[in-house]
Length: 198
Image 1 (spheres, rainbow, N blue to C red):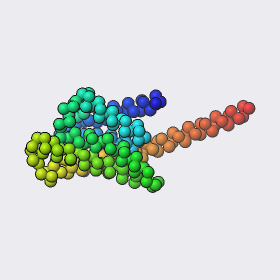
Image 2 (tube, one colour):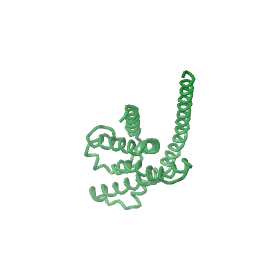
Image 3 (cartoon, helix red, strand yellow):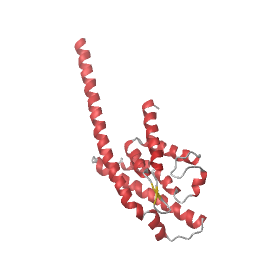
Image 4 (cartoon, rainbow, N blue to C red):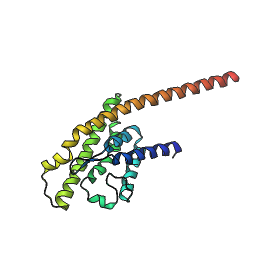
C-alpha cells in the first residue's frame, strides 16, 4: 500500500475517532458526528479502503482502545447502542453497490447511497437495542417505544448530516478535478518542452 494511501487512511481514522468524542446524550442513545464521518469515508474513498478504515476502528474499540463514544472493550457489546457501530460497517458496502447504478448525476447517487446507509445503520441499531433491552436486560420495551428512542429523535439531525456529507463531496470532487486537470496540463507542457529540446 502506498504511503499516500496509508496517510489518508490514518487521517480519516483519526477523524472517525474524534467524531465519536463529540457526544451528547439524547436518551439511552447519544448524538455523535460519527454518521457524518462514516458517510464521508464511504463516499470519498474506494470501497476496500473505506471498509478497512471502519473495520479497524471497530476492532480497535473491541480490543479496548478508547475510540468509541464511551470508551471501548468487549464489554461494549452489552451496550444497547452497539448496533449502530455494526451498521457503520455496511455503509461502504451500500455505497459501492449504489455506485454500480449507471447514473451520471453524482448528487443523486451520493444522496441515495447516504439514505440507504442511514437506513441500515438505523436497522442494526434498533434490532440490537431491542435485543439488549428486551432479551438480555428483560426490560420489555415495546417496538414503538424503541423506535421512539432509536430512530425518531435522530432523523432531523441525520438528514442534516446527509445534506452536509453530499455538499462536502460535491466540493471535494470539484477540487480533485481541478487538481487532475492542472496535473495533466503540467504533463503536456513538460512533454512539449522535452520535444522542443530534442
